Image 1 (cartoon, chains in turn green, purple):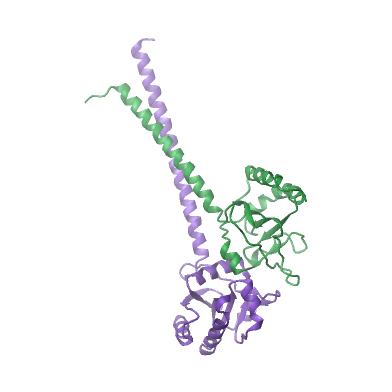
Image 2: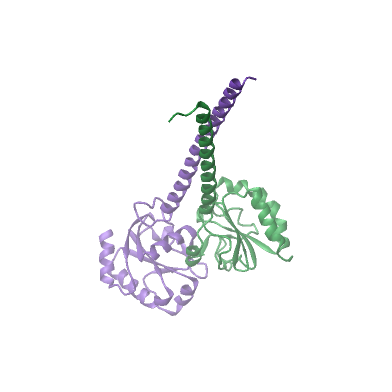
Amino acid sequence: MRFSAGSLCRAALIAATLLESFVLAGGAIEGRLGRRSSAAVRSGQPMVALVGYGLNRESTPSAPHSGCTALRVVSKQCGFCREEEPEWRRLEPALSRKGCTLALLLPTLADAPYYGIADQIPEVVWVPLDWAAGNEVTVTPTTILRVGGRVIFSKGGELAPADDAAIRSLLARLPDR
Amino acid sequence: MPANRQSHAIMAFQLALAAILSALALREVISLKRSVDANDAQRARLIARESFEPSQASLALPLEGLDLKGKLLATPASLRGSATIVVCVLHTASLERELQLWEEISRETPGTTALGYCESLECARELPTVSRDGFDVIAYAEYHTARVLARADGAGRALIVDGSERIIGSVAWTDASPPSTIAAAIVGVR
């Protein structure tokens, strides 16, 4: 069987196109799986209220999850946590308008204080075991938006502009305070 | 343009396109592999970080925690004199039996400090109603420590930790285990 040079060229082009398509599809699948693995707490899952203590142990345990809460899991060693600070300053008015509390969970005592002890944002260091067991956080920063006992947004990793837009859109659906 | 030259040009164009697409695919395969490796490494780091196996747990496990009222327990200073600390998770349903068991184990293993962590705040609220001589019980732990302890508890094991808060082993236990058996296992790890 003999092939002409033209058909070989066409076959090469088709093969390369198919190869590129498979690689692109693989990249998209891996991207989705990768994103999923970095945010272990999933949107839609129920989440019990976090009751815990921060550095100020003389007060009662802080229970930041009153109604709507934006819980940030952050660490002092995490550069991405610092990088997304401006994003949170921009989000603060929208959160406050909807009566959402911003709270921090610090994975270890070495991460505290994150903002400073005098700051008004609750920083939780010590948590009940069952809360930690039921809520896996794999990376810092992680952002969890919890409304009515359910997670409505979860992102493991630095907030991207699309996440900011998603949070704003979810907040817009909530009634004003 | 003669037909022959035109067909050569088309073939050259097709070959060039195939070469470009192949090069792009190769570059993307390399980048994909890096991404998969990075995700695997992140998962492995997480598993190691939350592991209670001495061979994998690379970090010290901060044991310091709080009781229901926020009092600090198991501080590094208070644990400094202990060569070995046995860390167990206590369960609401069998709290009294488990407290008795660990009190007895404490008596049978001199030089070992037993330290309990309540599985939930409900368990911690029941503590004042039962006797608990011999060891502290913690209601609130650091998130990372709580994750490791919950994993160990899920595997039915209590952790053996040295004075530097490094995990050196674990022992299997249930509320029905004979205290002498657990005490012997703890001595075996030490």
